[in-house]
Image (cartoon, rainbow, N blue to C red; front, top):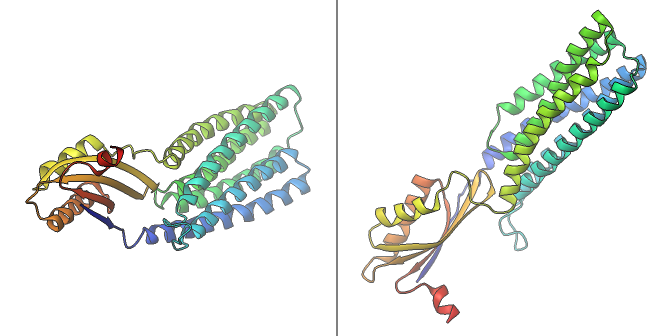
Length: 303
């Protein structure tokens, strides 16, 4: 019987560093414009702009959480956290997704209230601030969109910025309609449409991050195919069982398995070949493999 671990020596550090920088710049842009929007709302007396500034405050906090998650994930493993704290990124993504659902619900409630009790909207001031907000959000979104799209933490941050971007675009359309026609209900109507788009994206983020947190098998990993391929490709392997594949983050996948080998098979040669196949064909570079020559040790332990 043998037991072996193979680890990814880089641990995805380069990807994490890039994501951290991108989230930081998006945080800086969003936070700076939030301050400008608060000032514009106070000067113009626009409640709508102040409410949107509150929305951006929430997004700034979400981006700060994403940035902090990257910082935490860089901490080395310890006896208490043997895998390090990479999973904090996924937790941050889940929290961000849930926050987006809450924001969308608030937008819907506020939009309904305004349909029945319209408030004064200064179309000109609203248009200027919305255009500036759109420019800031486009810059932040481009920074995040060019990062690692498989990183749930980056995706969560990007979705928050995308929500602001759509909100700014909707505000521009609403401001133009108000300036041309004076029809203020367009503002809450467009807000609801934006909220629905936010919910759709946020639900996808929540589902994927929850799957990782629950240690689900990565969607693109077929365990039955993996077992068949290992037996077919590695001489001396008679059976592969007790296979478990899960993720610390979508970029950091792990696998444990038992491999039953022939009595005359070379232990080390088979072990290294199994590791190579897992890494090269399935992208699983962190593997824990238990080699068995007779029956499964778990079966003996239960007797």
